[in-house]
Image (cartoon, rainbow, N blue to C red; front, side):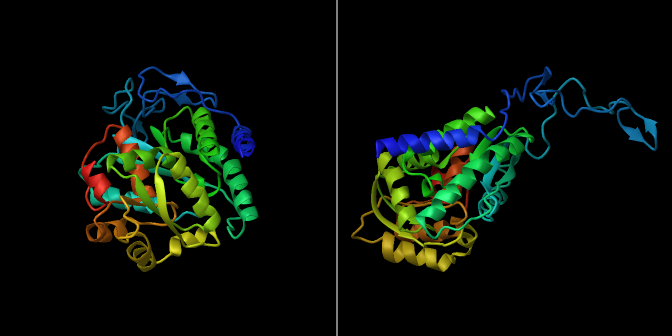
Length: 327
């Protein structure tokens, strides 16, 4: 088993590193200009204006009050710009994060999300062979997606993917994440870092998992959390046969799974954890947390919380669950 883990860790890292060039460190807020490997400018004063400056009806007006020696902030993402990488089939992660921002306009003013899809041409998930092919496609597409995301100069990248679905254990998951960090030279927010931080924040040890996965995916997810030091008491997976289908799991089914199968007296859970970034959960979390009396931690909200806290944004956020409100 150790040999297989090492092989997987090496193969996924090799697949990602083979996808093209890396970007040198970006000094985003530095006042001096420096060229990056693609001939662009890192840390340059912005916005750069053409030789004439502002023009009005063909007449040059110069800088028009824009100081050309400083880097003016991104107007909409002046506090932090997050680059979100998701499978191209994912229609939920970005929408869920923007919903949290919209519900907390004052607290999150200046927080922006720039989404880049990771192309996975055959998102079928019926068999273990399908999962292996999906893993290969995701890792192969991740390198190009990182390069595209970096064109917007994000402060931090967010892995909008449940890597435990297609990778077996923490070692290969961390190998992919570390290779992504090496390639991008940019901080990352990842689920395998965010989840234990959140569970420790709420004091949870005994957990139940809610996923869109089949039994193979659930075993992989359980393994990750057990290697992180948590006891997985019960799992429920909706066994979605296609990555696109995950977004179509009805909220009523999620609620029933939580109430009838996970948050039972016999399970004595400290928290419910939801995997699968294309399966939204914030409305369900808000509705059921007061009923079940334990935290319900959805992957999108938790990873976003982790990214915000690491970027120094500690505001208490409403309508996104107990974790974001209290921690």
